[in-house]
Image (cartoon, rainbow, N blue to C red; front, side, top):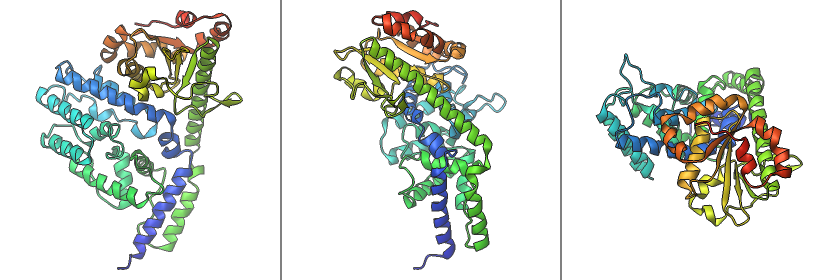
Length: 430
């Protein structure tokens, strides 16, 4: 059976598009999918969803989105770069429409909680699809496929992310007519997305965030989809446009450069904490995904621990992604630091709480949220949120401003001893 010329053209066009997209530093592949901070969010978001489930089961979730544990989780998703911007909009309470109806209807709220619990517990594609079908049968007003963004962070190889731009990009790339707001439409799109990934396996990750990012960039107008027919002139014009993509948007380049500067600043603060810990006589662990970052004349992990000690074996995955952890020479954790330069304060707090609550560590372990001085108000506001207040009251979670660290780090390294100097400059905000 011969393959139509138009199909061959579309197939080679998609491959050309993916290659250009992967190589463009402004596209979501490099600026979001390969962004080291992205991986840190998976465990913390899972932890946050577990909190939502627990509050629904205990009937303490409340009747409003603002201030709820769900807002905490969705905000930490929405504040990631590019692709998830606006992910919180479908969950905002719209009183005139009375949607999404999971705040005022206890029955719908329980159904939503059970759905999330199934997604947390299950590990097969069939179970996830069955859970979606059961939720869809409830016909909960205003609760549609936007929930897939929560599911993606639980099962990234099975559930693709979802938003208007992704749907628009999928329709443009495949000539489909997927509509928003309906689970059956989302599942049809998901099947097509899996086929696209399978057909381009050498260039697309099993993590469906990659194809989601490609579709998002197409749907956002950053890339034009290849023509669906074999007209040479149309194809040549598209290829010319594709070749000019990297030069087309000065605004995107500026944003990318700023993001890189932010990453360098984040690394610099980690380097300060690394050097201070070593000077104070501690063994230092650098986040697993940051170890090879250039710093000073070497790498960030130079002189640091090559592997985590057995004392944190119960929570190795959580500890491994904390920006900096200090240990005694005997392998006991002494302090943990999360640096939040411009990234979400939500995520930093969740990761530290995840470390303390899930890694079988002592409640007396000092935890430090390290952030710019100008973010102190924001840090306090987040620590006062109902979703955090109870936990932070029981733990030694403090705010360490950049200014105090920069001003005092050399003196602490020279004359300091143990944790006293660091705790002296940190602030207890709640």
